Image 1 (cartoon, rainbow, N blue to C red):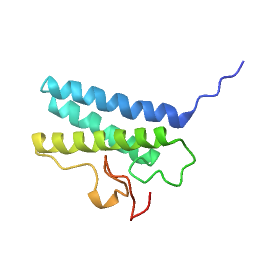
Image 2 (image 1 turned 90 degrees about the vertical axis):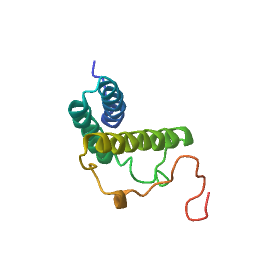
Image 3 (image 1 turned 120 degrees about the vertical axis):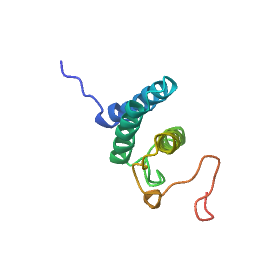
Length: 110
């Protein structure tokens, strides 16, 4: 019997796992390791397109909101760790094409 594993879902779970592990390591003051893991989370999230608007995707509103929240969690974590480590953020802010948490309209549209 063959099982089909949804590659996108697996990678999405990896982003969440990397963020959680990074947060844990930061709480132990293991900043270099935490910074490396959040970098992996950022790269995986960008591969999945989490930094882009999910509007054209054919997924439920719950999934769209989950994608947005996970992205902003990873984004904020990267910024915080970069400040604490005096490193640079893993990406340019201009690459983000997304609503912030709490915003309901995109260019005046729902």
